[in-house]
Amino acid sequence: MSEPALEAERDAVLAALRPVADGIAATFGPVCEAVLHDYRRPEHSVVAVAGSVTGRTVGGAMSEIGMRVLARGDEARDELNYVTRTAEGTLLKSSTMVLRDSTGAVFGALCVNLDVTAVDRAHALLGALAGTAGIPVDAPATTFGDDIDAVVDAIVDAHPLRRDTSWAALDRDRRLELFRDLDARGVFAVRRSVEHVAARLGISRASAYHYLAQARAVPGPAADTP
Image 1: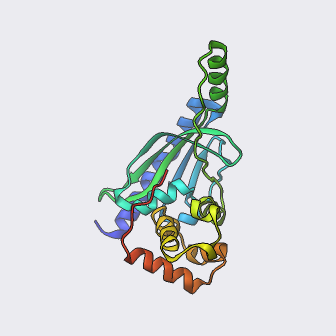
Image 2: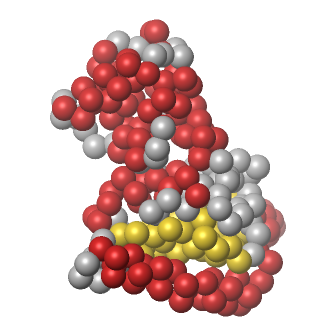
């Protein structure tokens, strides 16, 4: 199939899924949000939103979860019923279902987010009343926003190597580990992200490109992405 025909096919799939997103959100009510992504435009991947849980709007950027899918390319798989939190602390149960064209290429995703904060509190209360309350699971936080730069900043700032020490204190191996992990999370699949990461780390663009090239050339352990 020619590339123009594939592009038309992808557009048709996204158009067909817009009412599906509306139907999902209407079925589960105000605690549900369905977000349709077109990964051909990472900085403005949100093409439809039904419901309001994470505050996403049409034209907004993908989250770090989307970046992870983008980094895996056509090897990406659906991620179902995972638990995460927004920066504001809202507990979410989410699913990300990748969209493929007829060649098997991943080009987007349909994401469903359920606000289960109230359910979690009720569960904790019932557990306390029954004397069976346990230690709550510390769900990882995920940055949801319409600005791709804010998402990149959150990923860089949350990285253990970034939190625990300064860039100047990192030796070469740990600098390579940082760039290798950011690359595996899909950060550098976004346009101008290398320059943005460089500014966030307080290094030159040339240094950032150098470390990224070295990280990709030198094999290392797979990134531990949540």
